[in-house]
Amino acid sequence: MRLYCPKIFLTLNIAGVIILLFTGCIKQVSLNLRAPTPQLVVEGLLLTDSTPCKVTLSYSGIFNSVGGQVQNFINDATVFVKDGTGDSTQLYNVGSGVYQSASSVNAKVGGSYSLSIALSNGKRYISVPETIVPVPQNVSLDSIGSAVYIPSGPGSGNALNAAVINIKTQDPADQKNYYRWITTDWIPRKATGIQGPACANTGQMTCFQTCFQSFEDMNIYILSDANVNGSEIRNQTVITSPYFDYGNHYINVKQLSLTAQAFEFWELYQQQTTRTGGILDPLPASLVGNIYNVNDSTDVGLGYFECSDVASFKFIFSPEFINAYNTLANTQFYIDQGACYLVYAPAVTNPPPGWETAPRYIVDIY
Image (cartoon, rainbow, N blue to C red; front, side):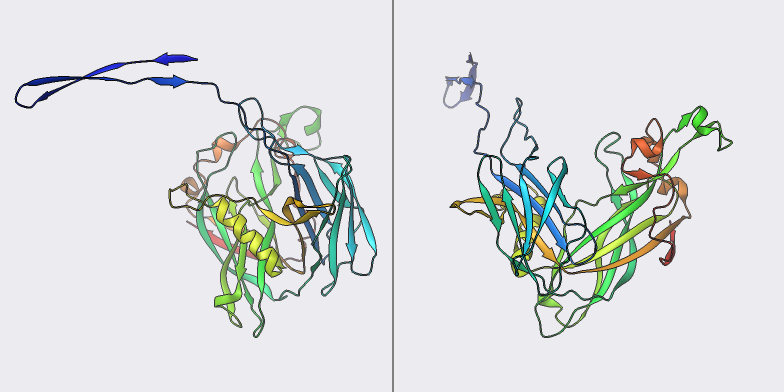
């Protein structure tokens, strides 16, 4: 511990010269790192389509030597999804805290489902059962707008232009509906490529320079029909897709139904991730979801196990860059060294399968 005691002299001319002495001391101390009790964190999603059920488990409250939070995955738990009839499906660990069903779980609208988690320390958690509510199936592309996107990682700070994908759907009348949208997006990327025998069949000196990277928009897109009940929902943003390179964007929009409880959870999550940091912002709260310890009601998990109906819409977005110099001005900051499909993994060298019959939309980008 060190003490700094500077002396500051102030001179005031009030019927003479008065000299005041002010002495201040600044104390430098070493703060103890935070050591909160770790809490179970659950991120889970069960859909009515053929997607395998996926759950990610970790502990919160772990900090490193410089005070940064560490992701502490749980890879030795036993996890089951159970339905209202008593049938269960085991989820198997595939690494990094992810547990996944070997095949699709036959989830249906009107069915009730819950999660069971047995940890290696003997604790057992379950989720409050969720009943899947139907979601409107008539989802389609509404418009494509423009936005600015700033990637993280190498080259961050160099903004890219991007496409804002907006959809439309018809909300049913005389019922309460809550929506969430998640979107898969394969975007064109460019790397320096590689040279050597691997290029022998291409007729080029350098190959594997381009590919399609799986892109995830980290924003949460949700909506309550409180103000639009029975009306058409228009211009609902579902993803912002950046322009890293020329080429098609392969997009799969999934429109999900939420229970009221799930909507409240995602609304709180959205509020906390979009806080501006102002003094009038509400203090952050723990995102307690629907997970609890079966033997201790005070031991609750963070996160949510969500069960949703789904409507999917696949399409190909083909931007035509009328002013390519300005639109793609900063892309040179995001060209990494090596084979494209390796440096941007998960990525594929050819267009992803599943879009062979999808509609294609060509849009002029200025």
